[in-house]
Image (cartoon, rainbow over all chains, first blue to last red; front, side, top):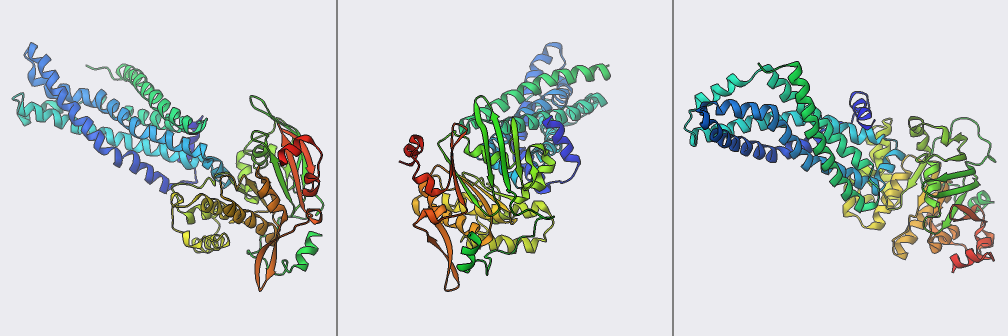
Length: 239
Length: 293
């Protein structure tokens, strides 16, 4: 219900652009460093690990392909969503929870605002915009990290690595790569807002809401990842 | 009587605040502006049990009671933040319990609320907090909003704090900003939820003087919820007198002469006492005696 009302609040006026910009800054710009670092090291370790396994079959040249598919289909969207959940989803729950226990939500209602439109809708919109952008960046940086290892440690050339990456990408990967972050962004922001707005029990309750929001959002992201993958593989089978 | 007294004191001649727009339609002056009829509300336990009272326009009701007695719940019901299980609540002729959230939004413009801890928005400046309702309303130009906000901050003695953040203010200053925020849309009714709790006596007197000022100079109907007896009696006793062109708070010593202020005491969701400050002080009820001691 909260998510539906929040999504309705994105479409219909009044719109709170200042709040939207603040949330886009918080979710997007301020999460950039951790997302880039996570993507970079994931790509690098993926190249190292996959090379060790592929060498057994004499398939080291396929490292670029494996890194790219793993990053775009799974690790990029999931790890980005989990990092943003830890940094921003918990922050949403804590901020809204604090507003509940200090009666700021009641004050909003008394002063003529709808807390869902004012607080939830901008957070949902910002997450829907910024999580996919962060995911694309994470994918790109991850593939770049894989290329660094491939060239410096595995003895592959730049051109070979990036040609392998290019050959690996099909429409299915792009659909997964864009659809998953949208769903994950919606999940992490909805859960953060719901937990925050349903905070009870004073400052102790704020702490509980924060913890719950991270746990529930993380589990929801991982479980929904399975179902999205299953459905997309049925719709777009890998040849 | 109160009007006569105000006229004698010269209070009616110059309102301290800009005039409020008259409410639409004719209104019976004897009709209560707030009316509770047999209101019941329970959560995991009974919160209010058969509460009934009326509040005439321009008068003040001071609601006393211990923690958990249901005092704040009465304010939340008036604002439509809670719905009663049974009974009716009429505010300015409207049954609040029947209104949906969308209908409640314009209705709440009639009411100003000072929350217990101020409930200022941490991310907004003092000026933005005070002007929030006017900005949200969207009918007043930005320049006029700033003028009104500065005027309200001047009313509570904090005009220099316009650009500060709430975190930079003391507890007493935060309450005064909350006061200005509640007053900015010229409400007909003011609700105060424990506005002096946690304040030192001098700051608490500043707040009670402000409550009296709004009541006497602007004729606002008020409900004050508190468990601070000293502050409750301060509000009941304080009146604004004009001296050398300035309004100054003065105290009435004889409570039996006071009109327009009624005390109501709640005990576990039931109205234990209702009467004048004088009747409260002279009550023989053991619970009230214990509370007053």
